[in-house]
Amino acid sequence: MVIIMIKKELSTAWRIGSICIITYLASYVTRNILSVSTPDMLKDEFFTKEYTGMLSSVCFIFYAIGQLVNGFLGERIHPKMMISIGLLITSISTLAVPAVASRPIHFICFTLIGFALSMLRGPMMKVISENTEQKYARIICSIFCIAGFAGPLVASIFSMFFRWKVVFLITGSFTAVMAAASAVSISLLCKQGLIKFVPQKSNGIGSIFEVFKLENFMTYMLLNAIAEIAGSSVTFWVPTYTTEHLGLSAGAASAVYTIVSFSTLFSPFIALFIYEKISRNGPMIAAFLFAVASVMFLGMRFVTDPIANIVLLLLAKVSAGSAAGVIWSVYIPSLGRSGKSSSANGVIDAAAYAAASAASAVFSVLVSYIGWNGLKLLWCALMVLGMLVPLIGARFGKKDSVSAVK
Image 1 (cartoon, rainbow, N blue to C red):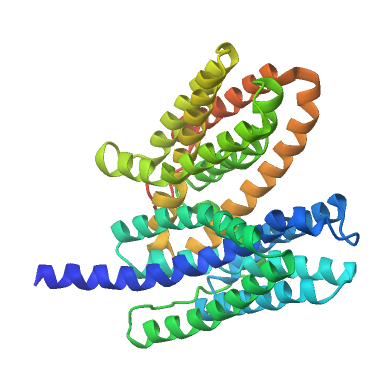
Image 2 (spheres, rainbow, N blue to C red):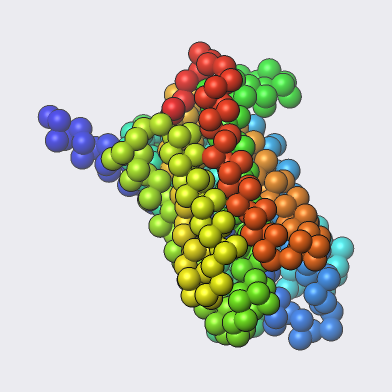
């Protein structure tokens, strides 16, 4: 009887997880096609670096805004509707970009793409956390993170073999197929009773602030913001850092960037392993991992050998990425019983994007004044802040009746 129950739980998790992961992969391919297609697009006089940069910015601005709005709506609108409509809007907008040579239309398309893509993750987190056993939900969410890294890889492969217009057409068509596939799959799982959706009652716009009542929510939100700075803002500077400061060639710098990016694929599973085998105190695990990252960044300040310096950078990135893994692989899946996993996902993700955007702007200005050595110390200081946040939260945090992972 127990074996039958385990098999049923595993089968349910596999069926729910597979459709969500493939859908999430499609969204990440779409998010990266502009980046990988830009070199080819610039061959056309219609496009410039400034123009494609603005299209990218508007996409991510509306993605961040959408995370707040759609995280809130994801608790109240059926996930089948949210996910399929989000994918359909994304598909139509993606297909329209190569079809129409109009800058206003392009801006509208990338605004819609950013907002529509934000309709996916929150509802999927809700489906996973509320309909699968927590141990399986953690694994699914860890693979989710890998899909986020695999998306840019798939997009770059498309760009290697096809012109940019074809890349947009392939991606838009694939997204349309996934819109239909996800709608059919979720409908079948609902009919079979494997997905149950209980909409939350709305108390107006103030409902979005209810997530702050979740135990440790503020701690995890701040931790993820700091981790996102290390994950995106620091990573952005890796190629420039390795060429200007370490004296590597452009080819070697590109290889280092690939290695560092690939290594962070394992971060969610490192976090999950520590949680399952060593400690179940999520905030303290994150504090430890940020402490390790701070030591690695500090070591980069004093180690001049390029290879050793890069190893320290890699270890710092993996440690910080593992700290983020505590949020996405452990904390979010634990919120199933709270009924607020979609809203929590939206608020945490939006805060992280805002922090990373601000950090990128600050780093761009500061690097001219404090140099690379000063910037490494700033990165170290950020990791120390990440270490202190859980300690301060544990000291002054207020317990709430709505409990989540400790």
